[in-house]
Length: 187
Image 1 (cartoon, rainbow, N blue to C red):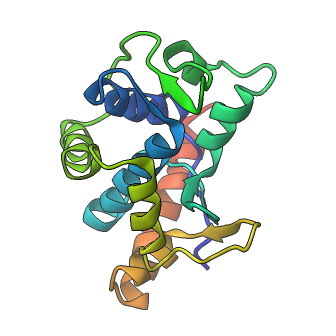
Image 2 (image 1 turned 180 degrees about the horizontal axis):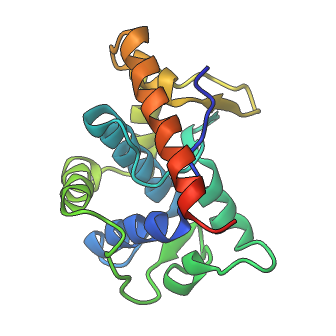
């Protein structure tokens, strides 16, 4: 239980990342961007029972990572994919990414925008290494010793003090949303 994943919403994830980049002046270390996005998703899951980016999480040596976003940064879009990310966010240059142009925010709710801004206010001035240290202190992170260990929604919820029953209820609601989403979206 707990490894269920929502369908990755590249447009929404791109808008969240672009908003963080805008708040930072248009450029930042991609490791810092990934850590801030993880903190946004973690807080959204704890507050509302839903992440913002709908990415998959893994414990890596430098802390939790959003898997699909790391792939977009390192490898670009898959062949034949729309490539929404690369329309708004540059390839890495010296371990930094930058905003190519201002992204819309129509995929983000007002509450999600406020959450992103709040996470940035709290952690945006920290260095990428301070964020790695913070990420290592999160109870759901496990040292993968050079590998990658999946982090489930239930792992995050239980590590933050939710009971196993509460975690199961949130995961079941997310599974219902995923099922409804698959019926409404074209394959």
